[in-house]
Length: 351
Image 1 (cartoon, one colour):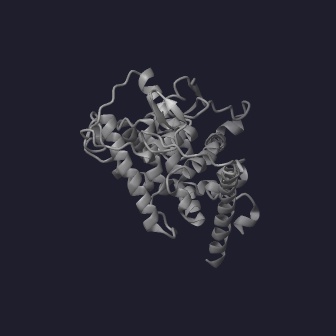
Image 2 (tube, rainbow, N blue to C red):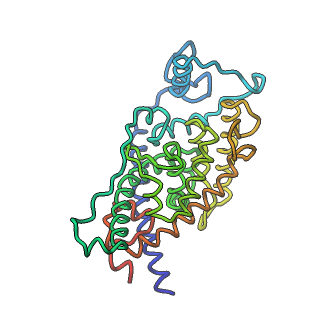
C-alpha cells in the first residue's frame, strides 16, 4: 500500500513539473513583454479597458472594435435587455477573446474544415492463424486508435494552459491550485471545446479527421461513449455562441477539485463566470435564464447544472484509462498526453 502511494506521488510530481514548466514559460514571456515603456492609459468608452484608437466613431479597445466590425459585417442589430441600464462586462469579452485565441473549434475556424474518416490500416496479410485470433486483432486496432487519438488531443493540452491563463483570476491562485485545476479539468474543458464537432455518430478533430462512434466504443466502452455523446448533444442543444462556450469552459475549469488549497477562491471565480454566462445568454437569446428555446431535453435546465454531469464523465474517463496503464509498453504516446493522464512511461513507475 505504501509502495503504491509512493508511485502515485511520483507520477503526480512528474505531471506537475511538466505543466509547471509550461506555466512558467508563459509567465516569463508575459514579463518580458511587459518590460516595454508604459504609455498613458486611455480607457475604452464602451468597456473601460485600454483603448487602441478611435474606431467606428468612438475611442475603443481592440475587443470592442472587433465587436463593432462583426456587427456591421453581419448586419446584426443589438438591443439592450435591461432598459439601457446594463453594463458591458469586460470579463465576458476577455473570455470570448481567449476562447477564439486558444480553441480551434470556433464557428469561424470550422467553416472550411474538410472531413475525412480515420481508416484503421489492415492488421496483417492474409494469414489463417492470425485471422483466427479476433481478440488480438481487436487489441491491435484499439492500440492504433489510441495512438491516433492521443496525437490529435495532445496539442489541446497547450491550448488549455493558454486558455486558463486568460481566465480572469486564474493566475491569482496558487500555482499548486492552478496545476490541479488544469490537470484534473483538462479532459472536461477539451470535451466542451470539441462538442461543436461531435454528433451522435462521430467526433471530428481539428485536422478534419473524424472518428466514428464504433471506433470510440472500441477505445473505451459503449456505456461511457453513450453518456459522453448524450452530454455533447445536450450541450449543443443550448446553441451556445463562441463567447458563451468560452465562459462555460472557464466555469468548468474552475470547478471544485480534490486537493485544492483555496476552495472558496475557486468557487468565487466560478460564480463570476456563471453570472457572466447568464448575462451573455440574456443578450444572445433574449431570455431571463441560461436556457434556449427548442433545446429539447435541455429545456428548463440551467447550463450550470451540466457541470456536475461533466465532472462525473471526467471521473469515469480517468478510471477507464487504467487500460492505458496496464498496456503502456504497447503504446507510443506523446509525453505530454501521458503526463496529463498519469500514464507511466518507464518500468520504475510500475515498481
